[in-house]
Length: 301
Image 1 (cartoon, rainbow, N blue to C red):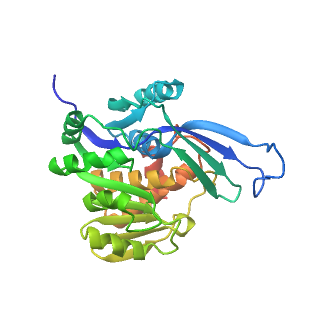
Image 2 (cartoon, rainbow, N blue to C red):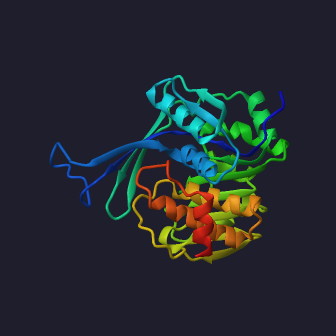
Image 3 (cartoon, rainbow, N blue to C red):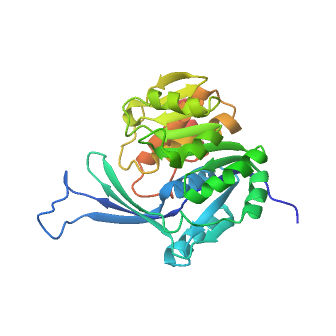
């Protein structure tokens, strides 16, 4: 049997998120019951990234874990329907990862994450080697087990993109492997008003990487060769309902636009922001992420 070839291998945690939409500015801890809207959906970084690439009509393989529970069966069924290859989707004996996100009316969110066994899982490295060898781009999120695949991707000369998410300390030892191996590095600036200082720290570790940091309504910061450029947010007629997955869509839109479609970095970053903003207009859903036709339409503006 001939090997299958993929545009993107997404490596990360996938699970079911429960978004709890609060009616007021804060939780009322003085009473036992708070009345909220609670919605379950396929989420987490691996869920958003893999489904984002699939919506942009790319051949995707997903490497990760789900449980043998109802949630895991549902995820398998939906990813298969998306056309995502599941040859690297293994079983976590503890169950499917879960997140609970408290969503505030002003756009704030608080995340409570249960990654199940991700600190102790050991993926099939021989199979991972084969999947990465046949993939042009490897999009890494940061479950602990994923760091074992970074040398395999480098060995196979696969382009490596790492999303290290909401960084607090640039010298956090957990993230160093991902920073060191990345050709393209993504992070959220939610904990830092100006991401430029973090970029300079990352360049001490990996001088050659291209860095993109989402800044929400303020746009994004694009860093390359030691220089940082601030790009404004696109003016789009879309509401901001739910910011979950915005960073994953920013990365996917940027990488598709630059690596596969050949757009310059700044234009690719603008298109990534369009994808992110579109995600923010979806309420608790990865079923309706932006597709290529809509991205092109909004990019032409």
